[in-house]
Length: 349
Image (cartoon, rainbow, N blue to C red; front, side, top):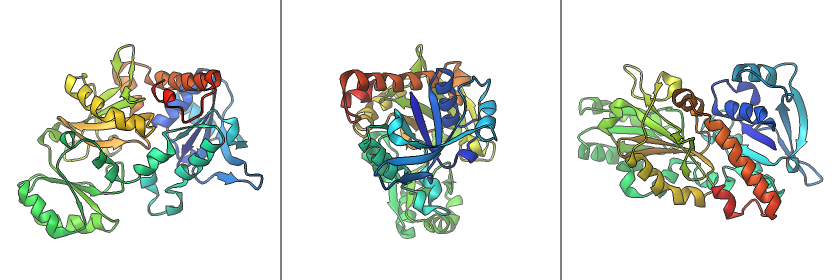
């Protein structure tokens, strides 16, 4: 297979990123991997979609770090490739990170992903589904009973009223955002004295998502991966782990000091996965990360769900191999049956 990975910028990729590990696994299994920056596409005068892409030779690399050293070094292969020559295009750029410095790039992956679809390329996650998920309002489309009580507003008085109903225990975050940026946790009524300042800080970037505080968050959250709408597993081992916040830190994101710990799959977690499965399949969401606290789903990560390498290390299972093998099955099905990239059968392969 020829696989393209759309990222923020190939030169800012890091060894621990899930995208890096997926590309490395694809190479190790005999496929070709190209990294494409979201600003590197071009629709040429001949109506062909092309892009400047960076890749490496087919030799084996001992580690993600060695792979990236070559990809970002002088020996990298840099070509202007034609999208129709790719079998798969994986959209792995995060629009939430593009709101300030490069607002033009926010919808770039979606726009050119749709164009690649017209050229017969399998594009995942599906760009039309991603367009629905560009803000956290997408989260509100999932069943009410698995979500925490939530208010979306810019009105500080409405937020204060909601806070009073929750005994001052809240989580506030921007409607558009990721990686725990501008997330505030209020655990006591005393802390809610600064609510106005929090609202002002988040409100500079738009609407504010206010959720009830879940006491189980003291123990962190669980990141569980779904592939083709089902919990991702390898030989009966599930791709999931607990993210525990650092001391004095409310956020459990790994990049802000959170640590990963093993977690056992439970019927409760599997039930949440089953509840969200129909919508994820309908929207063409191939690889997704669910963030779960207690019995509640608090986030659905569809753009760049990260931490798959952490799950591999903790669970000692090659989850990235399962992802690459699923892509291979989809392409083989498409070639054998003459199906289109919108064939619903592909969603479960």
